[in-house]
Length: 443
Image 1 (cartoon, rainbow, N blue to C red):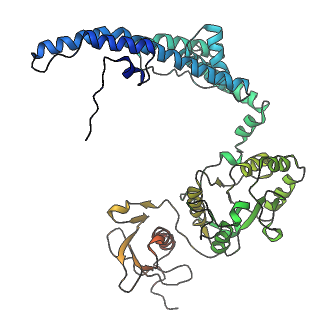
Image 2 (cartoon, rainbow, N blue to C red):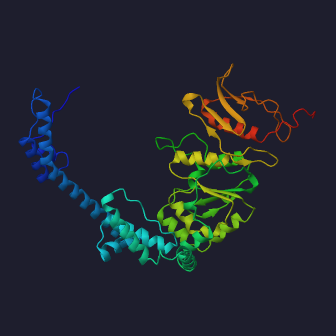
């Protein structure tokens, strides 16, 4: 392997590593004045030479540290100032700049000042941070105390936190709509969590999903071209047996029923989103589409401009028991949709609820739900692959029947290895909702 020896006595070496001209000259000079001694020199002499060079370089590194700190302070304050000028800053950002301008604080003290002020205004308890630098602990604590006091806090009053909490609640009820929304517990769809398998299954007749133009065609593959996988709307139709409530958000007509859906449109643009947001009828259309049934579980797949339109009409969406949205990359969005689909159940069907715990595939793929464990048992004797269901003691899960008395087999054949996780999850849900009580009864 080729090795490159650095010429540490040449200033250009340090210039190429991000040092300034003055720093590069000083570092090169220190190496020229205190070069390494030959390897046959006594160790004590070589260590003494290293200490001499380190002492010569200490002022250089101190100056570099001060320069980096000054750049950090300047960059952070400039970023916060731009947020304020663009109207994107919050109350805490404004307090940071106020700490600098009114009290001459540096960045760290300004942040502590803003945290203290915001804690007092929000009705929180007095809780300063724990600085890691002992030399700055006193100044940071003093900045927090000043901000806390200017925000209305009084550490000498035992009822201070309760008093400020009541004031903050009264202020929030009459202030911005976002704060009032937070108090009511009604969040915009962009703030909804991603689907989880911990929620209990819900009948398809009480589930709804809001899809977009993008869900009416096959999802894109890794090369960006449409893949062979089914569109999301077809998956929902198949898994729900067309029992779920489906609403489509289109770029042309806004919220529509699938029965009245026209040709697929191109992805929504910002101009189309603004037109829908300004519409006086879209909110009522969405409200009427959701009012057709009693709904407990709602999922939205909107991203980008579609999600911005949904956020604008969040008032038309009732507060439901479970409200989720897919997020992140297209691949993860597809996985989130699959998680949501697996929680649906048909009328009269029992489905096991709870979080499925998966093992690492390298150790042999296994999944566990309650007393049941699903294991990949290798290739099937004829063709395909085999999944085996066992109980906690390792015995096969024999004798279980579904709610309509159909017997369940603990060995499941899978045609494709790519469907192992889906089939294992389905099997665990099925066995989790099964019973042994009627297994011996004649039917």
